[in-house]
Amino acid sequence: MKVIVLAVLGGVAAGIMPLLSKAGMKGMDVTIGLAIYAFFFWIFTIVLMFATGKWGLLISQPLDWTRITYLILNGLVAALFIWLILSAYGMGGDVKIIHSIHAPIAVILGIFLAALILGEHLTFLSGAGVIVVVVGILLVIFG
Image (cartoon, rainbow, N blue to C red; front, side, top):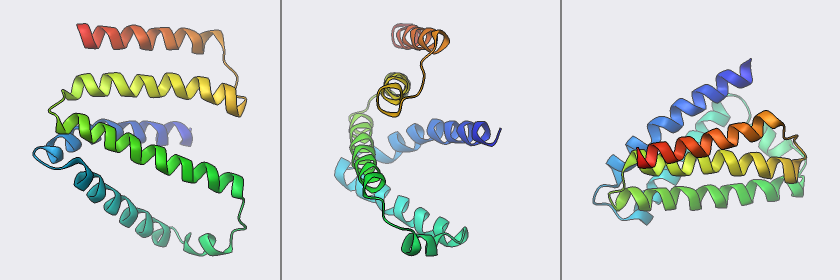
């Protein structure tokens, strides 16, 4: 149940982000916008580590280079994602269209990559869900 609550709250945060991004990018250079975003992301992370008492784990936890490599790649992909989305908003892109395109693509790609790389199981229902998402994208974009 806790996973579902966290996922719902993450969805709420992800739903608010496009509005803040578009409003913040109006008339701003994308690279500067990304730098501001990254700075406050870093500050939030440091505060969170201290607030939850996890700072010591950063130093004491044994290094697993496979996991660290995945996390580094994740950070690079996340930065690229934010840069691309901020670029689209900076060009005056419609929040509805941009969000309707990137969010479902992320879900669909995530499902297939999780099956391919992590060995998670695909079911008939998850396949049907992908079809519903694609139809939903088309309805939002062309509706």
